Length: 259
Image (cartoon, rainbow, N blue to C red; front, side):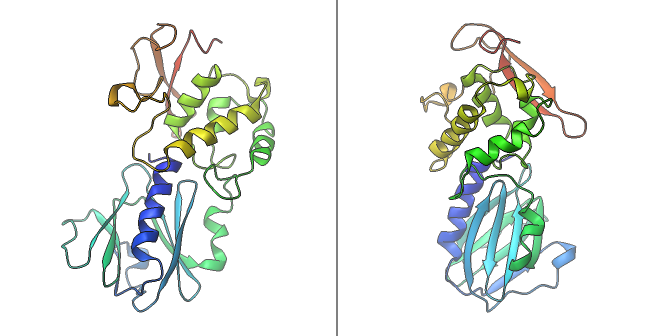
């Protein structure tokens, strides 16, 4: 699933293509909003909120999208043919550009005043202008018996982190993923590191946590199951974490992240 930095970049692409321009086409290819038509309305802006995107349009309307596992936004010149088939879920176009939502996991059209109904449950956004590490820590501490690995992935605690940044952040802090949240000494340092990692990657494609942009060297543990740890040589472990159907992949080094 695309994480907060990828969604942030998608929001930036949508702003560059749509902000301040009047829509000449809106095509909702989801049954719930199949008859909706935003043609003639100007797009005000697009905001990223964790893993969610909010495209605000004149008339107190917001198009809410979520990429889920396979979704993405493509921006191409108006007039060029969109991808064929049933992969396209939404098209928003003006005289210059068309934004094409492919395989979007969620598409909603709501009143802008009602955005909180869709994203109000989220914790502080790691890449938002109002990022609040103290509030993120407060939310984490509210469930001290929960594993830190599950707590970090809960978007109600802090919004934007996914399986890649969870694994990398816990490795860099030397924390075993199944440690109880209440037993983690420095939650402030943990969430601040996660924020710095996402911020360092928000301006470019790919996830680099090692400082080495070469494809084979970009991460410490994620994508390296069974391979030797870059620090201690222990083989990287892999498992599923969480209760069904919410279990997610977790990778860690038993040498650097002891129980």
